[in-house]
Amino acid sequence: MSEVLEKKVTVEDVLALIKANSEANAQEHAKRMTELDRIDQMLKDSIALNESHYGFLTNRIGDLVEQLLMPNIIGKMNDFGHSFSVVTPNYVVWKDKKNRLVEIDAFLLNCDEALAIEAKSHLTIERVRKHIAKLDLLRGNEQISGLTDKKLYGAVAGLIVDIEAREYALENGLYVIEEKGDEDKIIVEKPYEKARVW
Image 1 (cartoon, one colour):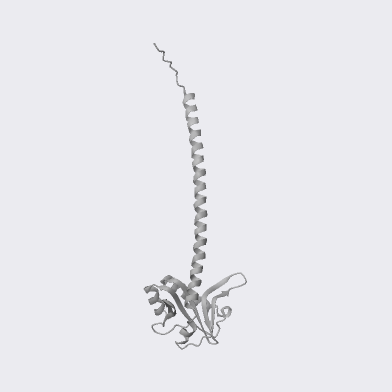
Image 2 (tube, one colour; image 1 turned 180 degrees about the vertical axis):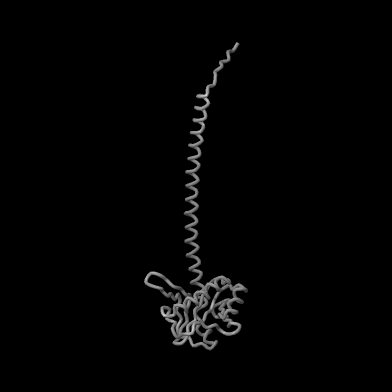
């Protein structure tokens, strides 16, 4: 016959078992948290890298839009009665030595008037609103923007122009510039009423 050994389980035995189990769980939890922290950091690094690549690509696309739309723009705008003689891409106005007030994708000038153009690969109504705010900012800071005694007009340009963006721009006195197929097919629509002067 086999003998069955019986052992009494004490409170100390239960507490020791709970403590050992808790320590094992805590170690496993710590390992999992370390792994989650590592994965979280990898995701953050990946997102940061993607954002930097996206910024680079959108800047390059913006440069492409400007190169496609700008070569014939002076002639096209002068067809509407202007007499622009200078086009300046990436026109930047500085508030002071360190702070940029505004950047305009292309700026057309003559002695009496200026035209600020916002060029996007895909023109949305939000971009039109932002450009109107830039025009207000330029006029409100005319001493530092070089616009004192000049009429300021606005235009928006895009390879793709949303219908709502086109309508909003034209209703608000902006010219709309759109590329149609190649650089010789630049279409400029004049505002519905008349070009707004800022």
